[in-house]
Image 1 (cartoon, rainbow, N blue to C red):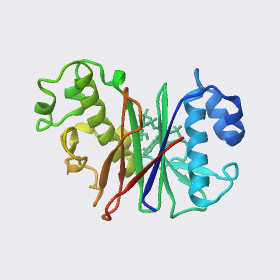
Image 2 (image 1 turned 120 degrees about the vertical axis):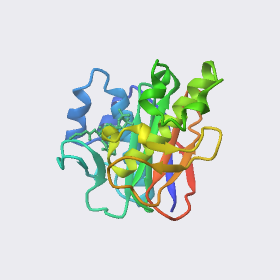
Image 3 (image 1 turned 60 degrees about the vertical axis):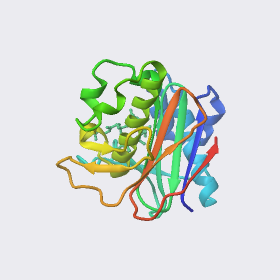
Image 4 (image 1 turned 30 degrees about the horizontal axis):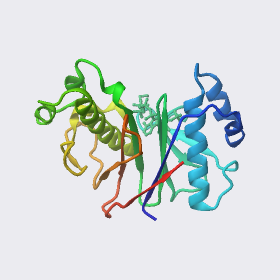
Length: 225
Ligand SMILES: CC(C)(COP(=O)(O)OP(=O)(O)OC[C@H]1O[C@@H](n2cnc3c(N)ncnc32)[C@H](O)[C@@H]1OP(=O)(O)O)[C@@H](O)C(=O)NCCC(=O)NCCS
């Protein structure tokens, strides 16, 4: 198995709640719009179940924060399946999940609209990366920004740091080239061999990427949710 990535549009379907456990349902109901959370966690459970043969309702996830060690937030793992690695990402319209046995995984999906803000470069890019976006306008610019952002965040979700590490210190390849982690400039311990790939989630208004902490070549299998 390599890395399997699945994506689906966010739906309003109360039947999906049956797949979630009590903790997830409680977290969903704390949100003003529970649908992205519910869609994403149902997708993740279905994907893991399909890849492992487990009952999607019987899966138990725990989170652990790489920074403070709490289990109240942080990177998800499956209880009792130490060799299966997962990640999930969602926004208002789209949810994405990834599962692999190769190593720690991070998946990220970005809406083009979310990359539409002044100061994107100073928040996100290393000096070496800023020329890449010069000359791009409109949706081409937003798509390039969203892709670079998704690549960086996928790496930071695979390592478990999240945005505790400044994304400008995670240098990735230019958006018109094959995805790769080029340099880790952060003070935090570098992750070691990291494979990065873009994922075509079949949505013109989103860009996604997946990272796996492994030296083995990455093959990404996409399946619609
Ligand atoms: C990881 C992070 C970048 C994701 O943010 P986002 O773009 O808003 O959200 P996404 O939809 O892409 O991903 C959300 C999922 O990422 C996962 N996640 C959360 N923290 C994570 C981390 N540190 N590493 C990997 N995955 C993480 C969770 O599964 C989360 O879903 P859930 O909250 O529904 O369980 C952001 O939550 C973050 O930076 N977290 C770390 C913050 C932190 O550690 N602060 C220090 C606290 S002591």
